Amino acid sequence: EVQLVESGGGLVQPGGSLRLSCEASGFNIGSHWMSWVRQTPGKGLEWVANINEDASSKDYVGAVKGRFTVSRDNAKNTLYLQLNSLGAEDSALYYCARTAGSTRGLDCWGQGTLVTVSS
Amino acid sequence: DIQMTQSPSSVSASVGDRVTITCRASQDIRGWLAWYQHKPGKAPNLLISATNTLQTGVPSRFSGSRSGTDFTLTISGLQPEDFATYYCQQAKVSPDTFGQGTKVESK
Image (cartoon, rainbow over all chains, first blue to last red; front, side, top):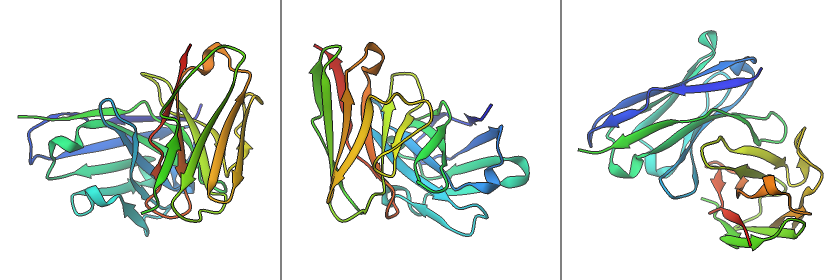
């Protein structure tokens, strides 16, 4: 079964850091672009970052550039998102997702990990 | 960044109704548009990619179309399990961007 499982979320103070992980099973992430998407409380989906198959290409939404870093360990079949300098606006449910090769849709999602930034 | 303007923000409908949701891109994205269904407490589910490619297992009552920079998701014959929030997403230019969402509610 193709599955993504996120972990690493939690309560963190403003200015703090967290590292989110996304472990894949049932497929090889090394064959796919991977993405992070977040949903803020009561609001919609926001694309956060993506990374290509060999990590040579990464991109971020403007609101997180310079603060978040996406990375991957294909040998561990795991995707990461390092979150630094967190603010209240970063509180959200963070999903990882797999990009379908030819059509670019996000065809497999995890259940999400919740990040709460509060003092 | 490309802006995706999705409408309506909500729609009240009954089982059996035809529901139409629209997304307008702020610039040409060719056919690189996907539609997702999202239910509370669950992961989003990809319904349609590349404007009109139905994902495996998605019922044929869901369909997508395009006219220039306007994209439409149609649900032909709404079923009880279709009450959810729907999002469009452009994948032509990074950063990918989502529409604001359309909540399909029971009338």
